Image (cartoon, rainbow, N blue to C red; front, side, top):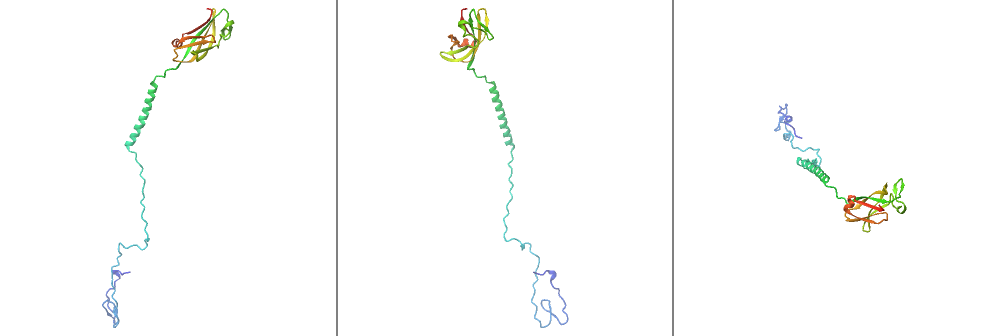
Length: 212
C-alpha cells in the first residue's frame, strides 16, 4: 500500500545531538543513513479490477419477446369481402333454385266411371251393387291399368250410386306412368277396354256393362 501526500513527513529540526541525512530523517552521528523512501500517488486507478469477481463469467442470454402478428387492414378487408361473397353466393343460389320450374311429372292419376245396367241391384251400406250374374261388380272391385299385358297401376271401384236401371261407380287409379300412348282398363275380369293416354289423362274413361 502506498502513502498519500498527506502522509508524507514534513522537514523537522533535529534535536540536539542528532543530524539530518539526505532523507530528512534525524539520526545520531555515525549511524548508517536510512534508505530513501519513494512516495507515490496513491489515487486508485479507475480501471482496477475488483478482487471479488468470479473467475468464469457466463454469457448473457438475450430475452426475446415473440411479437404477435398484426392483422393488417388489407387482410381484414379481404376476409370481410370473402364472407360477403359467400353470403351473396348462397343467397343467389337459393333465389335461382327458387325460380327454377318444378320437375316435370312422371305419373298421373287416371279417373273414370263404371256403369252397370240392370233391373235388379243389391242395396246396402256401400251403395248399390250387381246381382245375379253381376255379383262381382260392387264397391272395392279391382280396376287394373295395362300396357299390353304389363300391369301399370291398379285401383278399386268407389261407392255405387243407383239410378233408373243403373248403378254407377267412380274410380281413381293413382301413379299411372306417363308416356304410354295407349293403355287398357279392366274392371274385375270383364276384359280390357283401350284408351289413349290423352283421354286417360283428361279423365275421359267411361266403361259400361249390361243392357242399357
